[in-house]
Image (tube, rainbow, N blue to C red; front, side, top):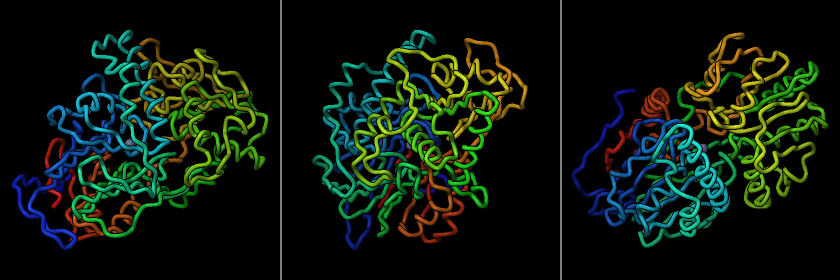
Length: 478
Ligand SMILES: [Zn+2]
Ligand SMILES: [Zn+2]
C-alpha cells in the first residue's frame, strides 16, 4: 500500500473553515472496517453533536465477528442515524447488528433498497443458520428472523431528489441515483455548511436495466469515493454491446454442441441485468428465443422486487416486468434444490463467486467436467473464491469447489465478460475533478486500487488532500 495513506490523523479539535463560515467544532470521519479493502463497509461521521453511520456491511468471505465492522469503536447507543447506499451484502449485511446496538438510530435508504435489504437479510439468517450447522460457527446466526421484523420498522425510505433531515442531527441529506444497481444511491450531506459527498458504489455508464449515475457536479468540500476498479485499466476498444454479442456467440455454440450455459450471478442487480440482456439478445435474434433461462429461488425473489418498482425512477425499459414478460424463464420451485443442469438451458444462478452452499457451486460439481458446457463469468470474482479458483486454473486441471467434495476437472469452456456495475477508474478521477473537493477519502478498494487512485488524484488535483483512511483512524474533515 502506498505512502499517502493516513496522511492526516490530527486528533486535536480546531476551527475548520468551509463555505465561508467558521465553525468551532471538529467534524470527523472514522472507518469501522477491519482492513482497507472491499469487505464490511462502514464509516461514521461525527459532527461533534451527532454521529451518523454510512452503510453497515458484512464481509462475504470472513466468518462470525470478523465478517462485521469493528462496532467496539463506538459506545452502544451512540449513533443517531444510519444511511444506507445500497443493498449489497458488503453495505447492508451487518445492519441488524448495528441497529440492535444503537436502538434510537433509524436507517435511511431508497424504497428499492428497503425491499432488497429486507429479503437479503432474511436470506442471510438462513445462510448463517446453515453455516452454524455445517461449519460449527456458534456465533451464527448473528440475528434472527423475528428480530429483523422488529428492526425493519426503523427503515425509513427516501427517494433521489427528495432532500431530507437526518433525524434530529441537524444534518441535511439528499440521495442521487448511483447507477450501480436498482435503488443504489450516492448521498450529499450538509453538515453546518460542510458539504460531504459519499459515492457508495457507482457506475456512470448505462447498463441494461440501470441508467448511469446522475451525481451532482457542484462543489463539495469532502468526497468519500469507492475505488473498486482502481487497479484495472479497461481493455482498449471496450464496448458493452461487443461484450454482450460475445456472450451470445458462446451461448449459440454451446447449444449447438448439446451443452448448457452456467452464468454465476449475484441475486441482486446482476441477475436482472443478465436477464434483460438475454431478453434483448433474443429480441435481436442473436440468441434463440426458445432457450429456457433458469433462475434460482433468491434471484426470483429479487427479480420480483425489481419488477415491483419497474415504473419508478430512472431505468431502461420502464414498466417492463421481467418475470411476466420475458420468454422462457424457468424458476426453481420453493424449496427445490437444483443440482444438475439440463442440456439446452441457460442457468443464471447465484452466487456470483460460486461460494460453497449456493446453487452455482452445487451445479458446478457436475458441470465443469463436461466439455460440451460453458461457464460464463459476468462479475467480480475474488481470487480466493471457487470462481477465482476456476479462473486461475488451466484447462483439464482439478479445481477444489468445496470442502465436502473432491476436486473436479475443468473441461468446460470458460469465458469472462466485463459487465461491471462499477465505474472504470478514469471515470472516478474525472468525477473527482468536477467536484474539486478539498479532501478526498478513498474507500472500498484493494491495496493496489487505493494506491493507484491516490497517486493519480494527487497529480490531477494538487490542491486536494488525498487520504486512504486507516481502519479506526479519526480524520478531521474541517
Ligand atoms: Zn455494490
Ligand atoms: Zn460494494
